Length: 461
Image 1 (cartoon, rainbow, N blue to C red):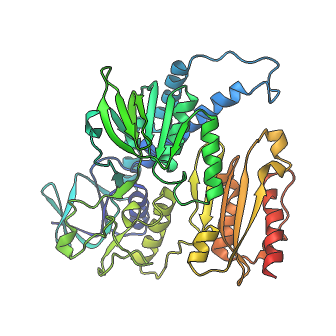
Image 2 (cartoon, one colour; image 1 turned 90 degrees about the horizontal axis):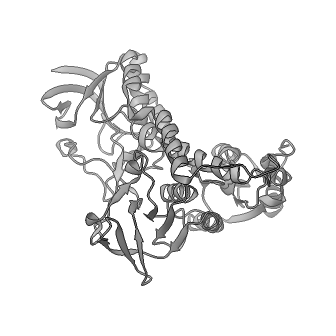
Image 3 (spheres, rainbow, N blue to C red; image 1 turned 135 degrees about the vertical axis):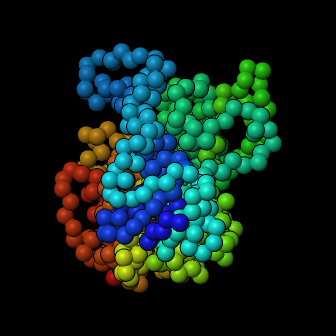
């Protein structure tokens, strides 16, 4: 039996990162991966979706070229189908054509033993990979998550995509129904609508973007409707029927029916823990499939089993996985580092982008915080006029007792970038008096912080 200091189940964002770091620190490390080194993000999620969003944005910008005085006459654009094919070619270049050989080579060059296959715990300190047994002192579970496909009547009889499949496919459907108004559903709705696809977005809740700040979610719905997306809130898909031309007829809870070429299922993801043999170690996932971990990354009740990434159910984003990997590396090397999730940013990379961190006012009050909120309309920021920004909003939430920010949410051009100021402020508990004294370059969207911070400072004094 081959033995290692650490065996990592899964070579996604967390697994790849921590395995390389541990190997470079002198530990013997094996990584078990059945699909691609790097996980979904580089190949069928984050990177290809951002590539398609940028192409769709460029197409809109080209149509707006005369209004921004980049040309005196409207440019001639090719058709939506031809443009979409060009966007797909660029997407696949950025996603390295879903080929992980480069990433796998880098992992092995770092000194990691890469084992291709499905791993299953066969007893304490032992993992079986298709008949090859690996011994471990510490085991890290970093198997990620997989798309949830709800058991809706007839869904299995009509053409569907998960987000992974949508971001791997070459074809542009003429019409699309998107199930789910989270980040993925919103982003892919905008992409397809901007390339001329008749798009319907169905969300069972009262707003898009889950439990994000309500006024920001309402603005996002307005943005998508402006792009031509038919946004249906508080609506569910009740049953599906195949059409004669190979599409789908979707019967909705509002009594209507929509016929589309394809259905995109984007109702969420579930931690991938099935078939790992964790019961051999007395480990049972929670009801949501996630592995409970302490603030050091250890799986509850297991001194030598750790978890990182989506499988923990904690803020399931690539940047969280990378953060958890750093925490685990330090602890596996003998350190004593605790993770702090108070300021993990969230983003919907639509145009304009939505970004948030921490809590909104209602969530803060439910947590027992005496919360106060201030709002800034981004159209009042000097940078909005030259940028041609016609909508935008920043909402800041503060703890009145302690005089610090506890949340921020924004919709606006590049909000995913300039919200970092609030991320740092919340993580470091920077006093409002200090934040309100910060000087921002003129003209930038960062200036949007100044009026609401002054308002909050006055409210907490």
